[in-house]
Length: 141
Image (cartoon, rainbow, N blue to C red):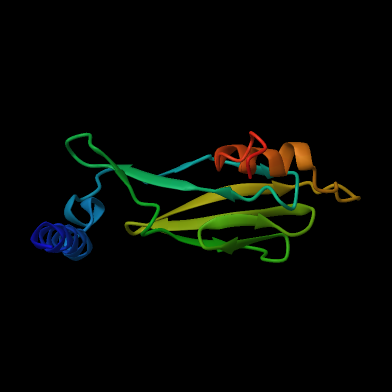
């Protein structure tokens, strides 16, 4: 019982320390330009959303991930919308995503080319990989 209590206290301490400490990006000032990867997006399917990675470098050359602090805005949310940091294609067309991080702004061009007819879900390509990853590919599930 004492060992279980010690483990629980250790776990709570680790979680509390990780939540209360500032992120690395808050501590390190960014020098130079903020970079966004990929620099341009081409989305070709409704189910193929994409994320953007926002990064910067400190004066010492240390790369810092700014994705969690970046603000993403779509110029035309009817073509591509932002949902929880993911660029979601809605209809064919072109637009731009404005990324704001560390006081800088970067424009990312987005081209959406959706098929006229939506492809049906594929058991082989979309369901089997999920089952395999979960360990359910041997027939025991």
